[in-house]
Image 1: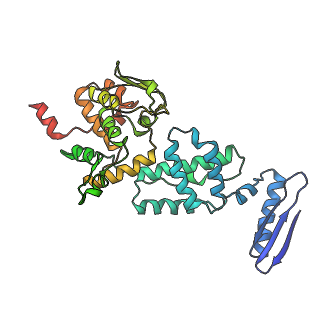
Image 2: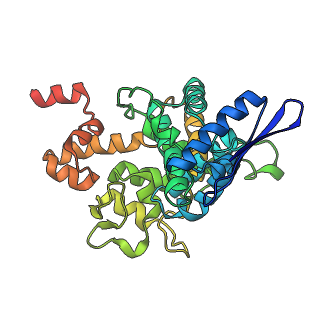
Image 3: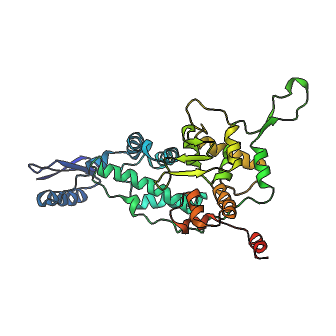
Length: 343
């Protein structure tokens, strides 16, 4: 049965009790809305169409994200990137309950992200993560809630990037990634002022990326036990497409690895994705490079490798592309270079 009780002016409690069913209650601003809700809930309880939304009414998005971060996120391939995106959702939407995380609210968040300048592809991936978080609440925690993030319209895809390094940009970038003493006045300060990137792993990481076309996550996960300098190969156990692959190394790539110190944890590049992001931004500003993303190095490397490996099957074996149409997005030969080949 349903009961309606005024708690105080502007607050009316509706409660529904059916034997053998969970008790449900909710507060409304007036008796009319409370009675309508109670009637609908009583009908659902009696007909078996009832959805227990009490957990969604109580569960805060930030608490759900914390649970997802503990139970699921560390198992994902892109754990570092996912952690950063979850932190954004926790900050922007964490104060809402799961019940009030509606399509309209998520759509407003999407539009705000796009207005900030976030790329459409980035926002699409972020919405995918939020959808996974809500799906976890539904499937693993048993929360009765609509997956609003999965229903929100994704921003239209933009044209794929074709940014490559222009003449002189690689030298400027590597110069900015070096570490050297700056010019100062006075003997006491000699050597104290540094110019460039102090992190010793960034410069070789960039050089290795240009030589191998590896993804940033693949390089950061690479361990020495999977590197064979004599055979000139690097084995990747965990890749974006879910399949392991062995990458052939050029002589320059081998030289980069031979010059690296060995880290106690066994990783070839023992740094985090966040450290790479921060150092990359600073280096690009010092080098005066505009609109250059770290992932653009994969485009650059694929285009250079294509000149050595014109067979697309062989090229895909190096870059790890299962779909040759996707590989075409990363292969950006310059028209002037193609004109020279035509004679």
